[in-house]
Image 1 (cartoon, rainbow, N blue to C red):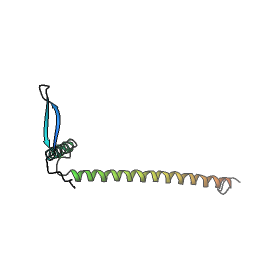
Image 2: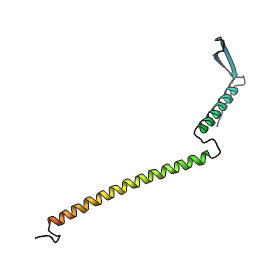
Image 3: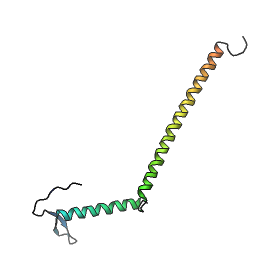
Image 4: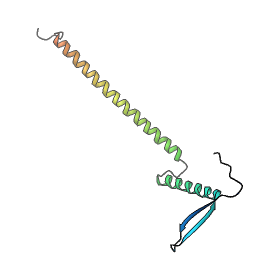
Length: 112
């Protein structure tokens, strides 16, 4: 990831907070410290989220790939089932039309 060059002087961030006595206080930190703090917080949050989903062990990537493969297989099966149902319905309709035409044209050995 590309980082922007910071000026020589340190960049400070001031956050207005209220302490436990309901007194306003100011927290100052450098930009680098803030970046590190946010990175650690994001990593902890991601770890907690994976743990909440039951994917905290080292197999999370494999588990997610398997779930995606399973979902893709389900979608393929559903698509194939719809195609089969449409083919069966189309074949039934065409067979009915042929039988109806044969009866109408008296091609079936029935009473003349």
